[in-house]
Length: 462
Ligand SMILES: *Cc1c(COP(=O)(O)O)cnc(C)c1O
Image (cartoon, rainbow, N blue to C red; front, side, top):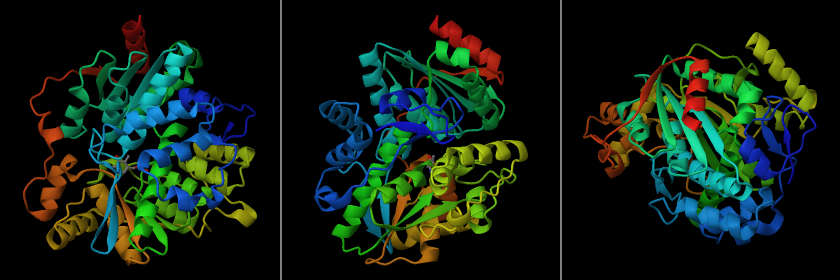
């Protein structure tokens, strides 16, 4: 399988090269040249374990890695999960809940980042290379990326979070990891300031090459790939329970998770609908309603991991909808960069007219109401992100034969204040989080200055 940029330059890379380079040099995102069609494999795949299914799907995309090695990476990645199913699902009321939070940081990002960390380790060892990961986080990504690469001798990770603006638990999940290759920074500024530092380092191509910068955010194709697996696995489990059609509700921020569902559908998994659920930061909901892609004012909500203005993976979706016309996408992205507004319009393939996508905006009151309802009626505690997908599913309607599978993206114990405010009950807890309280931590407060971070990277890696 070869990979190409969504912006149409002529570079064509292997899977391994794409994993290690992250963003394409023309600023686009890497995509496989085509989506492999699974044809008549569905029946056989439906009987596989999570790990065996992951191997079948991943080997179609990672065909430059020997199968036995790929299986070893998969097995190692999901040993850290506390469920034999890795991503178990169950019926709760009228929806199915797909629990994606059984990994070490209790959020769905572990599913991809445990895999990516082990994949980095494998590829770098084989090539005798090192990698420097630079990341900005508003919460969940940082800790999941750190857990993915902690202790790996060929990777250094520099993670920036906005000083005082992530939850105390989320901060502890990052700063209590004391491995030598983990470097935490609290930036005096916002998440966007931290993100701009990451961009500045990537845009300095000489620096990027010298320190071999790598990406662990969802622009990295390996993350999308790892997430495709649970769409298949959860669809099979729903079918085991009598489902005749399959829909998913996906709490969406950067469009990474839902794009993995789109890929599963393009490969041949019969997904009837993908319900895109956002909070008040609703650029995507507005796009699917109006065809206009335009950031609104940033609004802090009770689902901080979805407080996103511009969804980086949306470009991959536009590329597919534009009939894989990279020139067109490059033009769109240039327009968007200049005008902060985009009305993508491909005549017979208009991006808005996608029968598979349904978009819903769920506000903080509906989130609280949904958490309260599921807690009191079903005794099941939803985290605020998951509640957004569940609320959207309920608006659309769901039955055993025609279920909505709701992606549960975090364990409720990560967001105790919001849950307690909604239920009026006791705080949800988790032993992993309890163990962090009072643990020794390490973090450096720095100014929001790209040159300063470059200096720190140079000094640390000298
Ligand atoms: C990252 C995250 C999301 C959003 O996922 P995207 O791939 O960015 O759309 C939703 N919920 C939680 C808990 C997250 O950490």
